Length: 336
Image 1 (cartoon, rainbow, N blue to C red):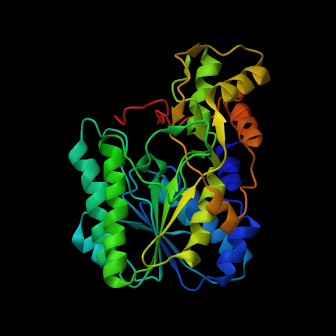
Image 2 (tube, rainbow, N blue to C red):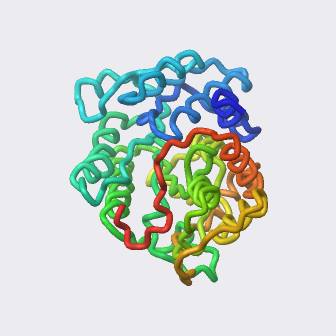
């Protein structure tokens, strides 16, 4: 599989997202579209709108620090806008659209650059909330807003109390609170999606574990379990959530089943005929989320965990590129 083939796979519309695009009115603006998930979400929106028979413009706004990404998205029918959200003049020039997906955020490097993390995660949501008071806004958040949870349970639901650990998680909760403020103040319908963890072959928890098994380096077991969802399926829910935005905001845990880290490593070992090396002991708590409400609204994710492992395994076997952005899923003290 080539990287172009992978991009096609990651933007293949599901019945859920085609139906959502059929019923949604207006154009879509994706803010922070240059990250790990944004490009495939933009392509998915274009392809789903086409399959739904709806004429719709999809704008992707980002700094576009990766040199070729802007041109590749343009070739796929996405209208790209080079924009720094901290620049008020550039923000003002963004198109007025009824549908906004907010993907800007910072996690890694927080320990050494906490001020920027807070500015990105807590300040920019207020700027965006003030700029688009009449739009529907779907904003990505994170399961890190929850405390570590007993692995004997199904994880916290949206009704359970938050308990962020570390500055990144605290700033992520601040992002939610700021969006909630502007939702209540302006009546802006918003959906906050607490995501963990999106999987694709170049990046994510499953790729991190695969790399360690392939190289024969230890897999840390301290975080006993992780929730997993195929990246395309997470993006499909984000697009479908535009029609479910509320004021005050709807909050949804966006993820799939919780899976033992040891089992994932052993599955790679079984496929490759090499025994994984493990380090540390399994703890009885982990960063978990219960996504039953999301599944009730949008149905279960079409791609199973076994399929995710198969796809990542094949990609690693053929020497497929990594984004070289480890998730640090094993981190338990919130220091990223």
